[in-house]
Amino acid sequence: MKIGEVFDLVSDDLKKVETELSKNVISQVPLIPKVGEYILKSGGKRFRPMILILAAKLCGYTGIQHIFVASIFEFIHTATLLHDDVIDKAEVRRGASSVNSLWGNETSVLMGDYFFSKSFSLMMRVGDLKVMKILSDATTSLAEGEIMELMKCKDPYISEKDYISIITMKTAVLISAACRVGAVLGNAPLEEEKALGGFGLNLGIAFQLIDDMLDYISNEKEFGKTIGKDLCEGKITLPLIYTLKVCSPSDREKIIRVIETDEQKQQDVFAVIDLVKYYKGPEHTFKRAQDYIKAAKECMRDFDSFKEKQALLATADYVIERKW
Ligand code: FPP
Ligand code: MG
Image 1 (cartoon, rainbow, N blue to C red):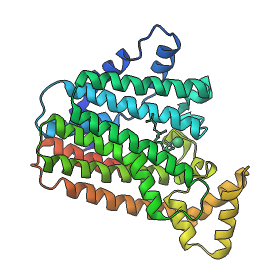
Image 2 (cartoon, helix red, strand yellow):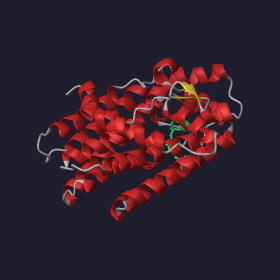
Image 3 (tube, rainbow, N blue to C red):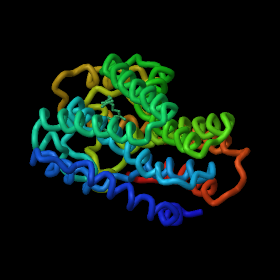
Image 4 (tube, rainbow, N blue to C red):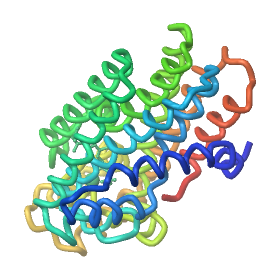
């Protein structure tokens, strides 16, 4: 199945999710609908809602709660990005100016809080304790991942294992939770819930690996974010971790000097990006992402070959083919 067909399969439900999201930014406080609509219209991939809908349907769910649960995931994701862009001092998000750069850090943090609170209102509406437990565990993990990332900021000796833990906590756990919640909605046996959770976890790790690879090799127009940003923010991701491992001692020294400098010069950042490309850091990262996609697909082996399973497998391929 092609990714276009996957979108066709979920497009009616995704439209309902959009309606639900818009309903939730209505407020008598004028800045909320203004900034809220700006964010909702900025064209996110709606990746988490999409895989949740597919997982629920694969497990035979036929009700309407999945629309609300999918909206919860999008709201939590949006809240984390609003906070993350403040932490990262990001100027661009989804190809447009970030909320913090247009309205300031205060607005970005508070709008994040607003979206996070809205996700609680929707959780109450769904009223399923098992879903709430998965969601609250996932949001705790998100915060833990970001805090661990902060602790490892500018640390050139970060291990690949610690890096994988960070991206698992900050990204993969929420994607895994979306798959798991789909299984819970469909009343799937625990085995299937775990299999879908494993699929999502591996998929999520691959998703972040590709994100971190694109930070070195994409261009801003396609990627929708600033290139080389991770290095400037002191985030040591796999393309760089691998380069530091295989490069010559003198190149290692050069790279560490740039990492540890407070005010990096643009030409130094470009020099490190060139070294990462020279030592094939992006290729290595891509290969690791492929391994995780293989593991993700393996988790799905016991499901019957329904169209939703084909769609989830196609989504897995798309995660490593994407350019944004
Ligand atoms: C993006 O990473 C950030 C995340 C995936 C997680 C952000 C989580 C938090 C800020 C903590 C939890 C917050 C709440 C409201 C529970 P990135 O910076 O590598 O990606 P980017 O390049 O897209 O910014
Ligand atoms: Mg960021």
